[in-house]
Length: 403
Image (cartoon, one colour):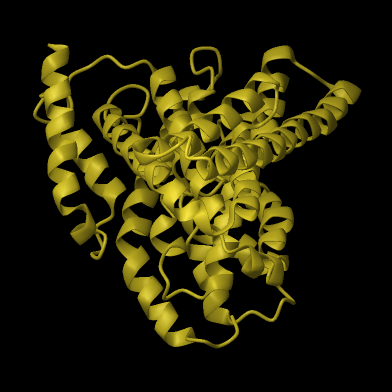
């Protein structure tokens, strides 16, 4: 198939979607749903107008870059005073809720997949634990939702994928090297410190330097016109690449860098972030479209009742029970707990984690990848369709009351 044919289809779809994107954002049909369905329809399982042989690593790269830009822009736009006021909510979601999601997911996985080893089940529970910043934008950006809830979900999705990276690496190391005993404990202690610590340090340093450099150059009119939008995009990718290069979490780096940029840049940040948001939307379109074209091919096509049961459980009882327990004693309304529990969409981070699995060398690798993929698909559809209606209903119910 000609590369020009693929280019034509992709560009035509992007052009047509961009014409009605703003109108669709006001409906229950989210962008990722459209991208995903379009990919399936145009791919080998559909009309075959896009039939390419994309390496799994290519999807991982697309998803990582998309997530890097989205994490940076979301944290750069975050309402820092609101985060400070309600910081205990995201702290509980990350420090109590995330471990509970993994533990409950592990227990459910042992029941649903009795033929998988405990390490494989632990990997699966961790891969589908982090929430997705890109899929959650419909809720995070909806002004009908109280600021405390929006910012809590934003901070949670910005940091939980980076926290899960060392856990994934820990289980992969056990599988690949047969690490046991004290070596396992040492690895379990070192990987999180390395990944989170280096990521946070890189994000803080580059976010501070980047903000200073952009402000100085803009004030002297060295950066004007269309060039104003490029530095933020480049800064987010520099943070991601540098942190990964140094052995840290690029996702943590991008979120921390965005927060630092947010705090130091002030009122001029909106103009600087416009281009970065557009780039993030473009990356998202390409990622979900590509994922859609490959969805019904190896290794994503595996689908049975166990996959379906675990996917549904992951998006409902596992996540919602963990959030309910982690927010106990905080005085939150019942509908707020349910809202926080439901809106934990799975997306780009889970795709990236699935691509890290050595499927040819790991027993049950195809099952792990397929379950993760279909959990993401179920999340794209369920959370995409429910985001705007439930956000409006919840916002109208709560109003200006305490959450």
